[in-house]
Image 1 (spheres, rainbow, N blue to C red):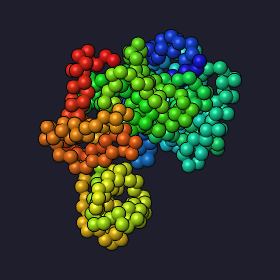
Image 2 (image 1 turned 120 degrees about the horizontal axis):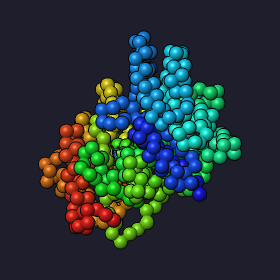
Image 3 (image 1 turned 30 degrees about the vertical axis):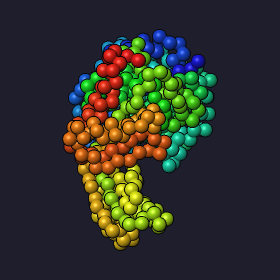
Image 4 (image 1 turned 60 degrees about the vertical axis):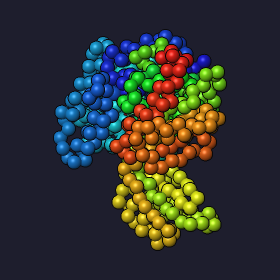
Amino acid sequence: MIKVAKFGGSSVASAEQFKKVKSIVEADPTRRFVVVSAAGKRFSGDNKITDLLLLVNAHIEYHVDCTQLLKDIEARFVEIANELGLSYPIAQKFEEFSACVKSLSPEYIVSRGEWFTGQLMAEYLGLPFVDAADVIVFHHDGTVDLERTATAVREEVQQKGSFVLPGFYGSTVEGTIRLFQRGGGDISGAILARCLDADVYENWTDVSGFLAADPRIVDNPRTIHRITFDEMRELSYMGASVLQEEAIFPVREVGIPIQIKNTNEPEATGTTIRETAHERSHEHLITGIAGKRDFTAIHIQKAHLHNDVSYIRRALSVFERNGVSVEHIPTGVDSFGIVVSSSEVGDAIYSIVNDLRNELKPDAISVVDKLALISVVGRNMSRRAGTSGRIFGALGEAGINIRMITQSSQEISIIMGVNNEDFERAIKAIYDKFVGQELVEMGNGGVQ
Ligand code: ADP
Ligand code: ASP
Ligand code: MG
């Protein structure tokens, strides 16, 4: 049995958190591979080391002195090392890094957050440290070379048995440091689990699993104990940020389940993510709700649209030419919409609309912006009639205008567009209608 345990930023934010990590790792001898993020926030309003290192880059770029900033980062690491009585010469190592910081690449600088956190964690757990630059191999296009990575991982396992690996970065074969997207420690953990053919990928964070809604919007939402990879992907893509949205791919392909667990409450069941969720007599109608603000929808109307087989393709090619990716394409009989992220489309919206007018000669074209998208996700929705009616009813009762509706082809999600300012209210209204009501019906506070 092999478990890969990845600990997120808040799980390694302080000496106190390090102690919790140690007891979790020591409680189970199969937790032999530990992946860490950079120390994160200790309390709300605190800074993540990664954000501070990004700030260092900005200072360097604009030729602003960052001596004090570097000292503040150093102090965070020194405090952890001192409180835990570690012998790793953190102050000396960090000062060596600070002294040459201006000559280092931005990616290298940011990667030091996980590197130093990993060094401290390795000593504290009494495990060897493996530099991610030596095992996570990036292609030049930014994707991971899984074959090379797997070979490098196997070599490290042979030499060291078990180890601590810093997440979030790796390097090209030439040794240039590359980063994953933000939150990418989750991807490092998934890649390691895959390369080790682990039995489970544990993702330790600061919530007791994946919740049915963002806890910053809904008070004390229900924990989702079982969720499928597809549902998870829909929710994390739509902003349920507990797991980085790309992190499922490496493990999903080889059938390794992911378990989301809480470092601050290790006994809690958490969430298990698998290919299929086992049926239970009492299955929830919806699994979760997530959403994001700031989308723009371009609505195109054209009578007998379906007689022209190339029409939608030609419309999409206008977006392609402008380098804008399309999020959704809700379609009607004589009309369709194209939904894009407002920040991605930016001012290109003007030339896009112009080109669409000239090239497609629509009967009408209109643009709606400041749109928030909300995705209601559930593997059981397709089997039960009337789900969308209930969602619309919930929004209608709350006086919220629905600007757009679309459904994923596998029918595991229904996506609605509402005005940005209605975003939080809409999520609460849907949550109350479905999950809130189920909890009342079950009368047990949500224990499954
Ligand atoms: P880590 O630092 O451990 O990687 P993250 O901050 O990346 O943790 O992810 C955990 C956070 O995700 C939670 O603290 C919570 O605020 C947020 N979150 C957003 N949506 C959800 C959801 N549906 N379920 C659980 N957490 C969520
Ligand atoms: N430290 C990185 C970030 O803050 C990666 C991670 O936490 O997974 O984005
Ligand atoms: Mg994270």
